[in-house]
Length: 307
Image (tube, rainbow, N blue to C red; front, side, top):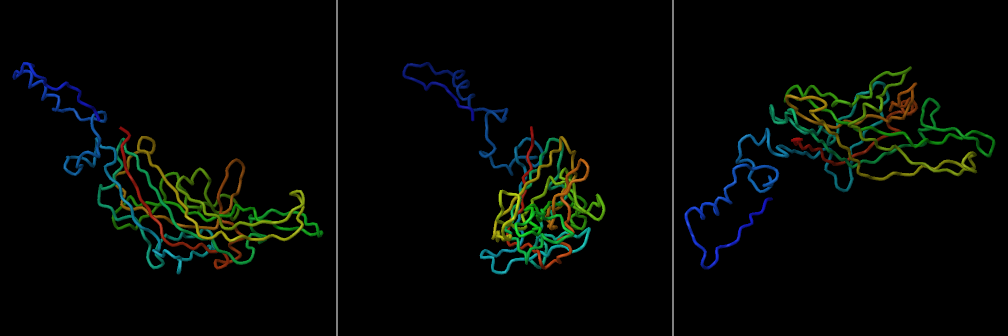
């Protein structure tokens, strides 16, 4: 904020109309800009066109998603998918999806010079029965020699659920959900019977670990005991997504935002591309052997201008 520096009137100073006009003219500001004012000092709704140009953040919004269950007494359970390509689960309260919307026509329009920032978090807990990573059809294990003369399958630790962002830019009916730009739907058949998305198309993805394991090894090369699984417990996971109009172009209106979950997934490499793919071994294990529980979280956005 600019500061006015002018000495006060002292005894003996001559007072004239011209001098007073100059003095009080210091307080007449006709060119408000980013150097001489702060937007927090003004009641923005009283200004015209505050939702278009000239202010840093003309619109922001958020919504509580999932199930409000502070003590995790009855969380929502998402079963591991048993078919490919699978339909994602929409984060909700166990009865209905919870989404940010519908937003009004033009309420969240991305014009030239706008940047949309979306943030989310969710309370989750991964659950499993047995050792599903040892399924022979899967990609979820390394195989080591065991000191007892056999082979031992050991979890890679890379199996994960994916939670990612979708939007509806068609209508307030919210019936035309699609992935945001640079985000895949993990339904691309990229080789054989594998479906997933390349890592370059996971810009709006949060990866959630499925399990943690430990084992005894001799020099890191030979197993000497069995493998133990460790419970992950409840954790908070988060993510963000930025949409820059100067790079991606303008969007006439965004009517809604939501988060979806799919999995489990595992990294997979083909030629020069890295993927996250639904793992066949987990499909064979059945949906109830690998689940993801969740309770409550938030999804919100802020739109601001670059100039």
